[in-house]
Amino acid sequence: MSINTNNIIGGAINSYQAQAAKKPETLQKKAEEVKEKKTNEVKTPANEASRKAGNYGKTIGQAKLSKEGAKYYEELKKKFGNMDFILVSKDMKDQAQANAGAFANPNKMVVLIDEDKIEQMAVDEKFRAQYEGLIEKAANNLSALKEKMDNSGQSSNILGYGLEVKDDGEIGFFAVLRKSAEAQKEHIEKVTEKHQAEKKAAAKKAAKEAFEESLKPEDTEVIRADSIEELLQKVGDYNFADRSNIVKTEQEMQIGQSIDFKG
Image (cartoon, rainbow, N blue to C red; front, side):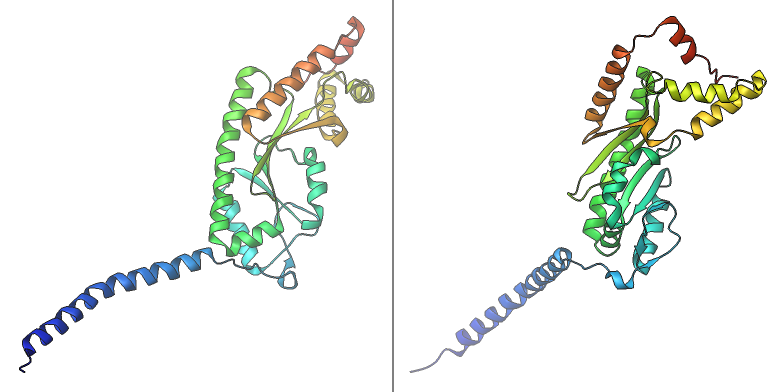
């Protein structure tokens, strides 16, 4: 029986060519799998032993960062240069939230962020992109909020706005308000009495400076919300309730107006 070698050789060639054609596709698929695995890989931030205290700007508690964390934190602050970052040590997160009123900045929006998140953002690109995106979006939203507050006439008692980078992957908003004149009447009276013997022009300036410098956490109200819309609503409700509850006598109105800050 004769064997058709042409058919055998032809079949082998076709099989080889088919495998060769699939090889680039196979290699591409493997490369994509490796890339996906690398992207999803959970990266571990520097351990606490390698972290050191340093000059990181405004801090709450004894904040410590690794070399990589410190480098990234400086890059983050430069990227969002229009915001006032405050680095919080992990053992002071609750205190930072409770005393947010002390960090109000009338010129920049405050960002409270803890050291552990900075360390994670320094090594994990996916984690970094997530939070940087949230901060950028929140900054834009807060700018819009400030404009709305100004237009609605509700910004006169607002000392500043801020963001809180939460543990649940979300951003919280807060506004720091100066309590009403009624709530601070006794405080204002003391400041006025202290400077009543001074000349009128000097008294105005001194009283204004003394009043602003002597503001304490108990003189402020911190309103928190999970969204810009909620914060806007809460501030409006607070101001409305505050105005509704104030009923002054003529004498009290004169006391509340005894400090003229325009001069």
